Image (cartoon, rainbow, N blue to C red; front, side):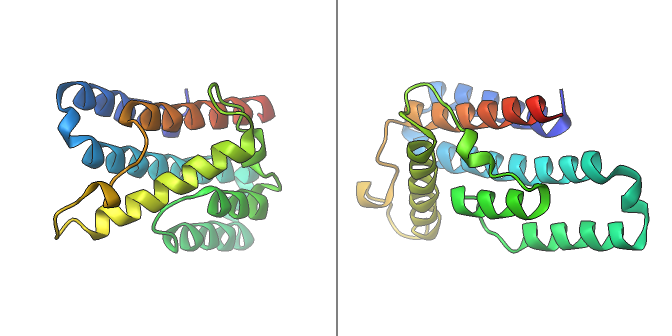
Length: 165
């Protein structure tokens, strides 16, 4: 199993256990889950660049490509569907978001909308951490459902990547 996916699954497993033990910390746990998602997307893009271009990365052009990817990744605070779409189309000529077929979600568009909403809600939670977080600034979905969607996005992404390898 590729390192990016293994690390993502390990982080999510820990967060699922924390959510079961501490449901009152659901907002913090979901922020951590979305952070794990972001780390997964970054690591996956880096892994795929090495897989796709391999030896070419040791050339000047390869070095430029790797530096450019690292800079592009660093430009984003979080990875919503649009960011992921652009990143993977630019570097790998594929929109992986269109392949997100997930149980409990009608289609890839709905999966994208949910991820985008969770990332927006995350932004609100993180930027209201100094003040009292009210339900208006928290996650609106059931925390287990939100965590399950993040897990399933990771699975769908990895399944698509494995088919392309």
